[in-house]
Amino acid sequence: MCRRFDRVVCVTERDQQALLSRGLGDCAELKGRMPVIPICIDPSAVEPVASMPVPFRVTHVGTMYWPPAVEGVLWFAQAVWPLVMSQVPSARLTLIGKNPPEAIQALARRPGVQALGYVEDLTPYLVETAAFIVPLHAAGGMRVKILDAWCWGLPIASTTIGAEGFLCRMATTS
Image (cartoon, rainbow, N blue to C red):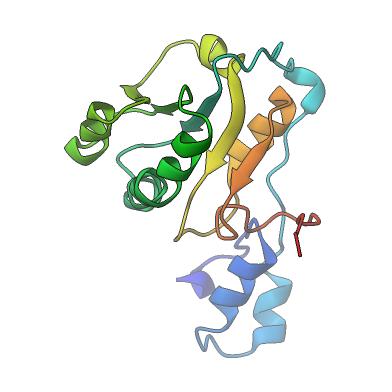
């Protein structure tokens, strides 16, 4: 398919390498027609939220019917959220996104979890957000929601795959 176009734009080098590794022939020639142009946003066009993280809210905003998002949220709710609740019993996990499947809606039966579906205005939730999560285990490209969260001035917690495509230093602990 890539050979049928004059140009194929990739948003990350990893995506470009994945396409080139498919045995498409002359990689140098094809790479020249396959530039990497990262997704960019104008941070001056977005106002940071006036953060008041009380109650302690962990927020996920995403396409809730996209299988990798569903898988990541379900993993977070099972593997990570109980650890958060053990340390901050009043914390809230707020899941926002259009058309959540039953598995996501069912999470709202757990203590501290809200599965809201689509919301018109994110602001009331973002001002209470202590951490914005991107718990993906499968994906490609780069997550625009991370760019949005940065512009909103929110801390982000992500899996490595969720943050894939960004050139930044990852904080590590020893």
